[in-house]
Length: 92
Image (cartoon, rainbow, N blue to C red; front, side, top):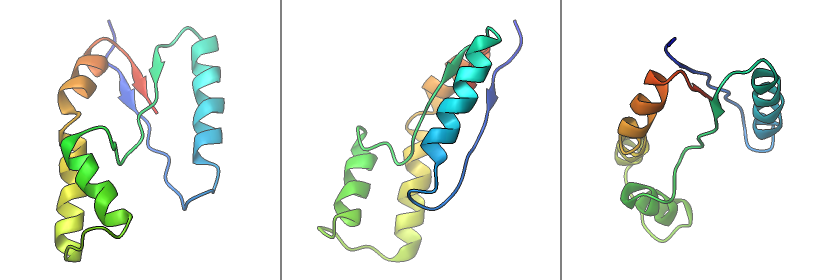
């Protein structure tokens, strides 16, 4: 089975990232590819909850700490991402 891929779509808030992800996912699925979407920050994790608190103004951290939390939030999902990539899923 071919290894999956990660496609990153970046842009400012309300720039159309979700819309473009859906269009791309539909096109890939129509070609028989496995697709999944993943948004960050992921507020369902312990670190994601902490990120939500500083984004909502309930906590204050230095910028360096915010950057580390955002990076750590991705690591919380590493096992899931690795598993899906190994079965050929394309992550959007």
